Length: 314
Image (cartoon, rainbow, N blue to C red):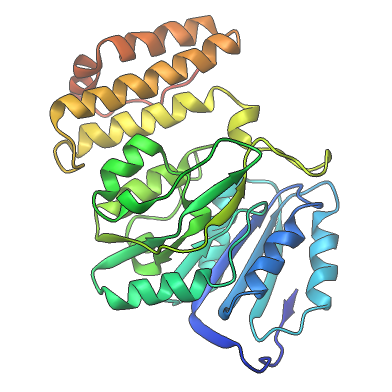
């Protein structure tokens, strides 16, 4: 389904910006997200919505919403069989074509009205910049704080804090293409992996101002799909693996000393072990604790050979 309409007076249109929104079973939440895109003071040239095999009527809700829109933004909606959020994001990015900037907005998060104008202006001022992020605030979870340190040491910040800046970031599309997009084999953490790679290709800008609102551990409608990391504690293993493999490949390019690299690995695997213990996955927890207790040895082993994907087993 596609809709093209006329631009309302007073709204700028950013022809070179595409916004990708993947949707899976978010019937009660997704329209707030989509409204926040079309409420922008500077509208994106494209809004691409990919339904990833929803079974709750999300596709119908989105289709009906599109029929009511009068925005200048070109709205493109596609439904596909369930393949995961990374495949949905990549599918949307492929449909965007040769845009200069792209934002990937989760279907339960909301932008402030000046998000696109603020982040695009930040990227336009610095040719070497590959990403611009606003601050974020978690609704129903811990306070995310600001993302100011991303601008000074982006790779280090991502390794320490994780990759949870997807919905509050505008990316230079060329950098996403150069890094290969989202890894579709990863169930959770593909944004963490991609953003770490992107952070090595150029500067990361902090666009201060109103934060992006993100839902974490909070569900307005019981039928809507919840946060994936909360539903699957073993995803902590994937995040620890991503961080460890990235550090092993890019040691001393991350803004960390060797000792600090070891601390990151230790903390990631310790968190993974705790989540596995809580899930009753004792054998996998023992493996995770081994990595946490000997981070230098673990990094050395990763550097010596191409590591196999870590699989958590009970």
